Image (cartoon, rainbow, N blue to C red):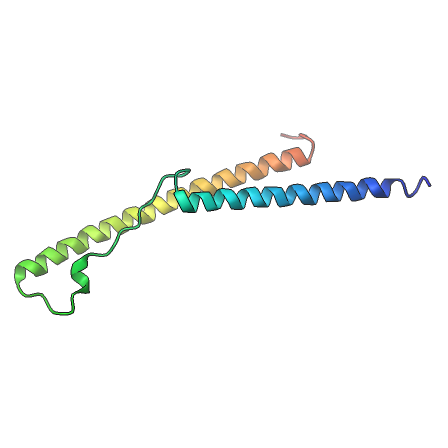
Length: 115
């Protein structure tokens, strides 16, 4: 009897560990989805739309329209660069938060030793 009593405890531990791991993954998935959907956790990054003038089927009618569309394209380029910077900041922030959560989890998993 003495050799088999630990088996249920070990089995319970692995069930507990697996269920906590699933909860942690589910929590991260929900948090990541919330960031993507609402963007409020790390700042909203509005995706710019391309200028209307580039979708015209015909060539530019005059110099004014050409310069106007070129100006819109320059503004669009700046907006795209800002958008990419925003996404990078949001991605870095989310990754830092995730890594901090993993460190906390690992600390708890090792019963607070070395934290």
